[in-house]
Image 1 (cartoon, one colour):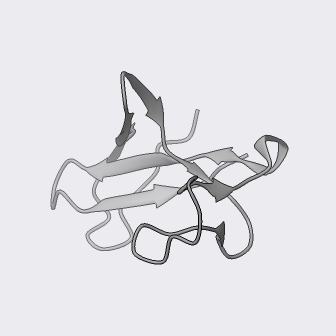
Image 2 (image 1 turned 180 degrees about the horizontal axis):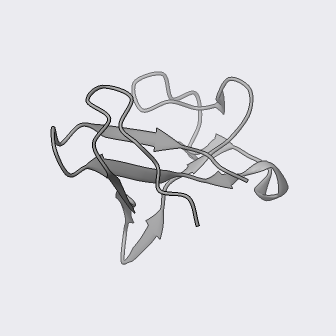
Image 3 (image 1 turned 180 degrees about the vertical axis):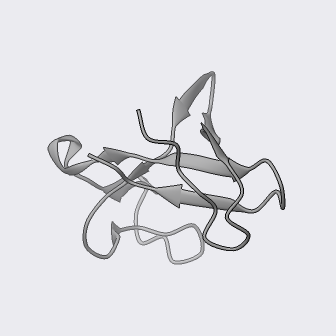
Length: 78
């Protein structure tokens, strides 16, 4: 396994994730291609304020934290 290096200070990066809190569950944040389609919080045109997405297109996001300078970098690795 290759250790990811910080692009800012060349320190060692540790992997983790940013929890996505949704009602009574906690999920891992994911990346989806394209622009969000559907309704937004302030521009709601109907009852359902959700964004359309294809679960097959979603890629989990891993967030790396540098142990030296503490910068966070998020990657949607396959």
